[in-house]
Image (cartoon, rainbow, N blue to C red; front, side, top):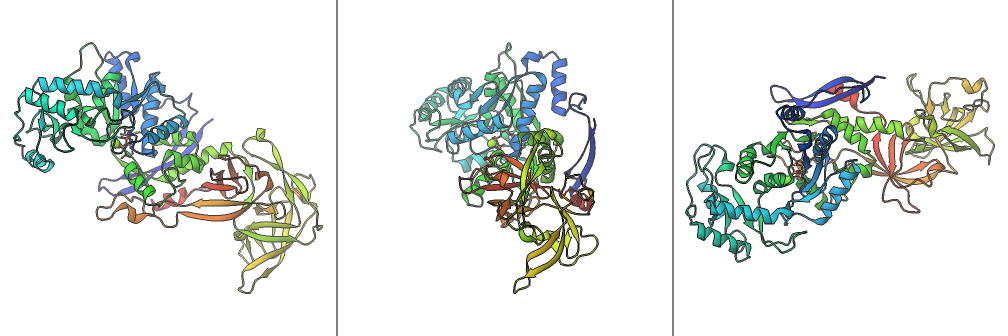
Length: 590
Ligand code: ATP
Ligand code: MG
């Protein structure tokens, strides 16, 4: 069986303007298809051909526990764990926890929960903080070799002394301190004798290097902050560059994959490893791929934290957030996020992926797995004048046309029903296939009704439609009338048995496609003030006992799930995504 996928991505044309490129892709089921290798897989294949044993492959996903994981991380997770699955190689979950000022145990727990929920299993749970002693010992080794020194300049002086990309730096006044003095000062830094900012440890590399990061980078700084794992054992903390490669080396990670902004750090990564790698152990490689950016949102923990702290959302797991926990709460499935990551793949250049591609994937998955139910979001009362008062019929309704094994359920039909306000007009042209005066529609799983008249309130809005029904037309009853075709089919619920629920309808969190892409304006200016609409909806009674997390298709409306705010007497649903995409529209625009 072949499946057709339509998808699109924002890319930049040669004039650096964003354009929306759409593609149709025919895919065979996974086992049949031989997917083209991405450029990281090419690197690995070359290494295997050059003598790496498959058993030497090891990867890691290295989040800093300073926030919740977002969709950008999801692509890194899918890349690293995907490689692990592909090559049968272990993948470590490594917490890059070297900045106690911003990191917390709560973030560690949330990150573990999210990676697990995505369906991946890590081999070892590692922490950079577990290597603080080794890192310190290696720093002492560098000092003894004359390759590191304690600098006591202010950060402003240090910046001046480092030069500019076009001018070499000049040695600062402390660059030639003796080994003894450096050892003494570094020990005293470690022992907590100095306040923050008084001294730092710098590598002594090359002040004329064209790579500014090689101009005596800082390796350690004093930070009098308790750490969520090492508590107050340390008051000096290693910098990223002095930590990452060594952590990779200690864990014997073969390929350390990071985002493109680390490309200039690669030289320093290699320099640090040069100082300590022994020949009989595997030397990790840093390789870079492009950051994943998504339209109409921001993917940066720091910026997402601003939204949380500013009260623009209810928390990291607000269903509007592009965090994994937000998407989970919104009703997304791990499969849809993984399929999205798979479709986009990884790139060497940054681009902006349209969020509707993600929505396309969640729709596609939810279509397969969710039962269909009926709910009315914006009710208009219909009275069927020739239906006996007090009578209730429990009609058979199929749970899924996609999957017969989902079975059937009963829905009550009675004289008074709700339909959507948008589904009725007093007058309409021939293209309006819903209910209009004198016109007929079928009520899903039920009867054909005809609108006879309507009543209005004083300001002219319609409050009730009076209809008649054809008693022989019930769906599935086998009569000739039951097979009669009318143009429109509407969803509905019976008023007396309807269950009230709070329904949360979400729109894009940012009104701008690329809130982060404006030089002169802050991304916060583009927060969409109307990203949440809370309404009361009427649901068929089978949903009364719906459990938190359960996902449904509300027929003709979209996919919805039961929110964690649900309590015994207050049912809360989130709209995960509307039923139809804005795909076609976007394609036309593009
Ligand atoms: P943030 O700015 O959101 O904090 P980060 O890169 O600082 O992002 P880390 O926790 O350090 O976040 O990242 C863990 C891993 O996830 C890193 O390897 C990082 O490169 C990767 N990653 C983070 N954001 C993205 C993204 N938008 N696209 C792809 N990979 C990402
Ligand atoms: Mg970071």
